[in-house]
Image (cartoon, rainbow, N blue to C red):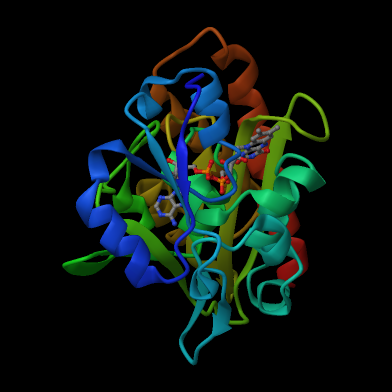
Length: 290
Ligand SMILES: Cc1cc2nc3c(=O)[nH]c(=O)nc-3n(C[C@H](O)[C@H](O)[C@H](O)COP(=O)(O)OP(=O)(O)OC[C@H]3O[C@@H](n4cnc5c(N)ncnc54)[C@H](O)[C@@H]3O)c2cc1C
């Protein structure tokens, strides 16, 4: 690990943007540091040029969680503990609440932030499937620009995103889900705590007159990055709801994953588990929707 790294602690967003506009090639943003510090210690190529860390934790607006009329906004530097304990998240975003509750340990959740999770974009980033089914968008700023993009478009590949060196993620926007939606999140790890996900699934759906009126399905870990399944979602909405539909969906989920990843040594184990997890998720959501 490098022996000396400068740490800057800007107090406003404008200060962060000013710093990023000037010395971007040697700068790395740091929030909770649970990925950055590990990466620096392991001499990861991603952080090889880092000479200065810019701490985003001292800007209050990057921590706010707000309920607007149409959307919920979550500050990029909100920690998982802050998100878990927030009443807006508890009332409106139960899938996200469940996803953050599975992350690391209490100590990690007290430090680690939501933007750090999806900017790092590990295949096993647990908030990603939850944010994908909520159709989350993210706001990104640099000194000279401000843009909003769907999280799905922002994520480009394992550990790769659209983020440019002079940009910072400021917030996550989630359209307020209607009350007719029910959903769930499931994580499979090798143990119950401080476990890297092997498989994560998130589903949000609305049942109406024995049909799936709307459904959003996302996975993590079992695909190279968090992914939605548009073809499966369309198929799900064309058929009557019954046990057969759920079994067919579970089987097709397996096929979709193989399409993305190809057959691997772990497929013999992961596929039936994904299919069973997905079936159980759908059955559970159906039960709670009735
Ligand atoms: C012991 C341990 C257990 C873990 N368990 C889990 C787990 O169960 N599930 C899981 O998903 N992850 C887990 N992680 C990984 C990690 O905790 C998460 O990915 C976390 O969300 C990273 O957030 P952070 O604030 O610590 O990010 P940091 O390490 O500070 O930053 C990560 C990346 O995001 C960038 N970044 C941070 N904030 C911004 C911003 N506002 N704008 C632009 N770029 C930004 C940084 O430059 C860096 O590239 C674990 C890590 C450890 C060490």
